[in-house]
Amino acid sequence: MKSLTKGHLKAGLDSVRGAKLRSFWTMLGVIIGVTSVITIVAIGEGVKQQIGGQIHHFGKNVITVRPTQLHTTSASGSDGLNLVTGLNISTPLSAQDAQAVSKAKGVAASAPLTITPGTVRTENNKSYDEGFVLGTTPDLPGLINQSLAYGIFLTADDEGTNVAVLGQNAVDKMFDTDVPLGRSFTFHGQQFIVRGIFNQFTSAPLSQQADFNNAIFIPNDVAETLTKQTAPTYAILARADNSDQTDKVAANIRQSLGNIHAGQNSFEVGTANQNLSTSDTILNLLTRLIAGIAAISLLVGGIGIMNVMLVSVAERMHEIGIRKAVGATNGQILSQFMIESSVLTLSGGVIGIALAFLVDLGLRLGTNLKPVISWQIVLLASGVSLLVGIVFGTVPALKAARKDPIDALRSE
Image 1 (cartoon, rainbow, N blue to C red):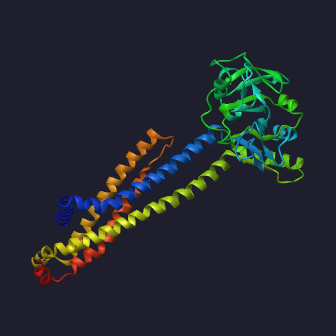
Image 2 (tube, rainbow, N blue to C red):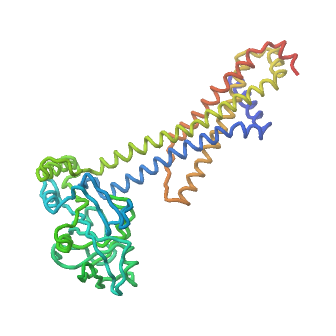
Image 3 (spheres, rainbow, N blue to C red):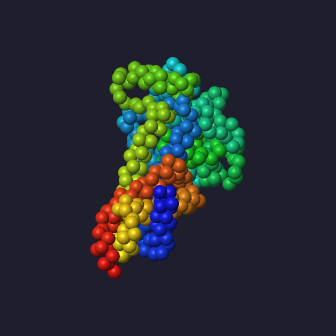
């Protein structure tokens, strides 16, 4: 039996080699299907890991408080995120909310992010329009896990002081030096001294549109004074003193804010795990949908293999007659053509897997995507390609096995 199977396998490989061009076109559907499915699933898994890394970069015990309705508009009125020129919040957070969050049970640190509209002017009186000004407190760098390249961040002693910390892009646009510590700019007619410079932000906290590399950070009380207590707070960050109790601390914050807002649902309290779960759910649905569409090419490839195998059976009818005349059973004929069909699809699957790894390498070198090909999806793709060969090779194999040997010998 072992030698018989080995002979069928050799016959299948010889059949593929004997008609290379036809075999390639036959396998093309399987190759495209396997490559597409592996690549799409790998991209989905890579994006999930990238998002998860960004979320957990800021800490698993970080809690985010936001207004339920946050909309931004540019000066022209079009939708977008220009935090300097305009922000529409139906029920913005307030200084009272920030204080309530900081005093909630289990909160180790907190920091508001207060939009401070106005025009920033550099030392040569040029306006800096690409960025935005945020009022915040000394706990911010620890909450977003971000270090400074030069200088120091705001401290408790800076209350009421016109000092600022800049993102890297703001430094490049506003000054003619990489380290403008001690240099100044004008905001709301007052002079601010540059105290520190952040390292490059590799991911955007809270919003993909609001790039903190463009931001200018000033003390929150100064921001409130400059805007006469009208500056809207678009988020409050907090850190639980125990990461295992993050959900409980979030509930405490929700209760404290609920007392201030008289039970109105005008704010959202979220944790890193909740944000990650939501993004994973959406990405999983999209990945499955697109992978399902790509898998249709496997079906098309299977139909192509069935058609080619039917042609192969017709061409080799005389050979089938001779084999049956010398004692080959229906089962042996069936096995021969089933193995040939499986060799075709499995070969296509192997080529598809190799191409998927090449596509993965190209995406990593040429884009910001980091696809992740798991051994599970490789095994699944191999199994599916083999299954396609078995399923779609059944009809041609049965036709060959059931052929009457006398009729088969008469065929030319």
